[in-house]
Length: 66
Image (cartoon, rainbow, N blue to C red; front, side):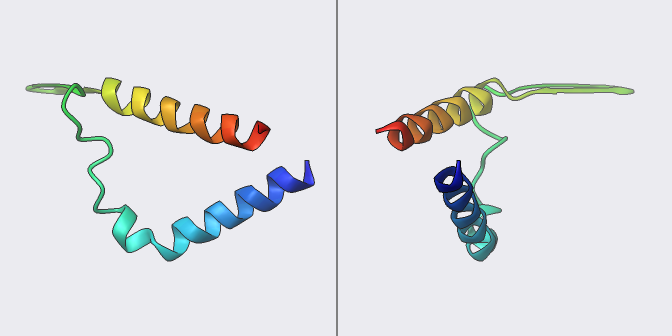
């Protein structure tokens, strides 16, 4: 538990330091994300973004278990 908290803290600090670069990464505007724009209605379904984030989180958790 302590190791997990330390790693999470280090990751948050790294993201904070690199925030100006992280903001420019086009996460959320990837091909495969569904956007429906109609008058009075805007629906955004980030399908590709959700899959990418899921793969990254799964890989990180797998590496932490090793």
